[in-house]
Amino acid sequence: MTINELNEIRKSKSDLIKVRRIIASEAEKLAEKTGYRKQVLVCGGTGCQSSGSKKVLAALEDELKAQGIEDEILVVRTGCFGLCSLGPIMIVYPEGVFYAQATPEGVRRVVKEHLKEGNICKDLLYKETVHEDGSIISLAETNFYKKQRRIALRNCGVIDPENIEEYIGTHGYEALHKVLTSMSQDDVIKEVLDSGIRGRGGAGFPTGKKWMFAKASQNDVKYVACNADEGDPGAFMDRSILEGDPHAIIEAMAIAAYAIGAHQGFVYVRAEYPVAVHRLSVALDQARERGLLGKDIFGTGFDFDIEIRLGAGAFVCGEETALMTSIEGHRGEPRPRPPFPAVKGLFGKPTVLNNVETLANIAQIIRKGAAWYASMGTETSKGTKVFALGGKITNVGLVEVPMGTTLREVVEEIGGGIPNGKKFKAAQTGGPSGGCIPAKYIDTPIDYEHLVALGSMMGSGGLIVMDEDTCMVDISKFYLEFTVDESCGKCTPCRVGTKRLLQILEKITSGKGEMEDIDKLEELATHMKSSSLCALGQSAPNPVLSTLKSFRDEYEAHIKDKKCPAGVCKSLLSYEIVADKCKGCTLCARNCPVKAINGTVKQPHVIDQSKCIKCGVCMSNCKFNAIIKK
Image (tube, rainbow, N blue to C red; front, top):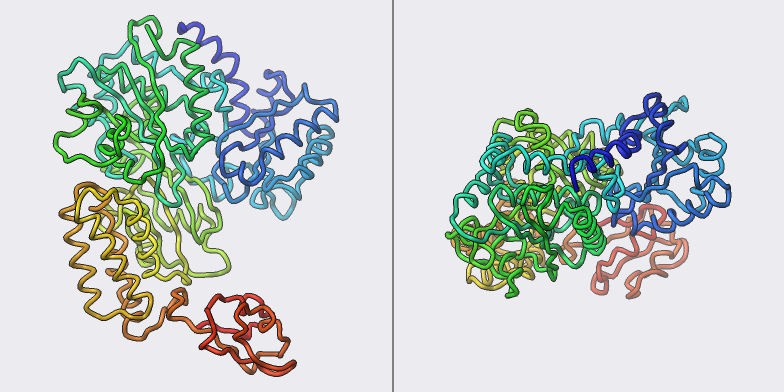
């Protein structure tokens, strides 16, 4: 493909996509040039697919044909919009109206009333976009979006990820052309260095330095690899980028390959992510067909191609050396470092490995310049960060904010706060490798240094919110259960240490803990951090250490009082019926699976504690709030 051909595609598609980025009058003017009266975008990400977006899309296409307007409306299946809790999601342009939790029945109404007759179905819109007076605001003005700055996610929810022309219409492959025709290898590396971007996979190592070391390594063969083995519980940033904007990763890998002198790339992605794998495969085929991968790219003599390698779901393969070992066809186990991958990586050759989110920023840095990127964020943490916001939060989904945004802004403003009037208790960042940040630090800026100072870490970007009903000892146990299962077993500190930590936590949550167990936890965790082979073992104690630091009173309550303050740990719970509130309706007794509740009609009932299995069915069935958990 030549630059002229690229520009022709860009001209034909740019107005089409501008309509999706601009709301109201200007978009309406642009819409006249596209040939369509309206564009309807339906989220095709994994989250919305699980909520039924395929059925919504089928109903939309069928109804458009039934109404005879299928040639007037452009239907686009996109990647993730971010507001995953509202799926299936459908947006209509040029109005920019946001239909939430769409159903086939609702879509049929939208086609007839909105798309054909011009009357927006306001009762089906996302409630945050409709004011009390009936006026509609754009999605960009809602609390969820207005503080976001979407760079890595810029095309997710905007373009059709399986159409290379739509990516080109958003200046796609322009950065690759610029690099290959007007920049030296050193120029590219300097631009990435000056931008200040750091690895978004966890450790935060400067990306430009990694490329510089690999370029300096003398070897006839070098490799570029992309880490898409996203395994943290609750994390789905990288998967969503691959599903929504796969060409951005391909373009960035080609740029990295040119910068270090590589001609072969690998994307290591979990086989558990079929949508991401499919869309990446389609994108690779399209890039090859257009001459954007393969031999003599843009007629410059530069050759580069990419292979997909599927991972089997081992969390340890997120560690760079274990990932490379797996690509080579061996069991995914970490290797000692040094030598580092930039010197001796894949097949013993110099290798640059970046995760998906890091690569998603590269083309924008090349196009707009290092100074543009470095203008966002903090002094030591530049740019933006994508977070998968989950747990006890109203707006579950993907958010991208400038580094330095406070935890409060993310939780209370973007996330919409804690549901059901509960209080914010803590946030877990960095997944099993991270730590819990208590409520008193809610105004902490989110960047690499601040999170580490609080005993947590950025990690890949999972952010799990916890409310007052969360037991912090139980949370530590949950993450240790995960790391015990995922430890590769190669080194003793991790293989034995994680199991021993879990055993002590199980002892405490079952009511058999002793005060010296707290000292054992701290001592063992400290040794593991200093002696484990890879980051899995070194960081596995973080949830324990951070909760001990901020919530030691909960550990002590489990041990001294044999009580779980949050009412979570079953061994320490008891359910009791408040006689004054019990109406004797017998509903609890009839639903108890072990017949542990006794009483007569219209008389207060009693729970036999020797039979009670603490399942909570009685409490969930009681209509009079007469059952309490102690």
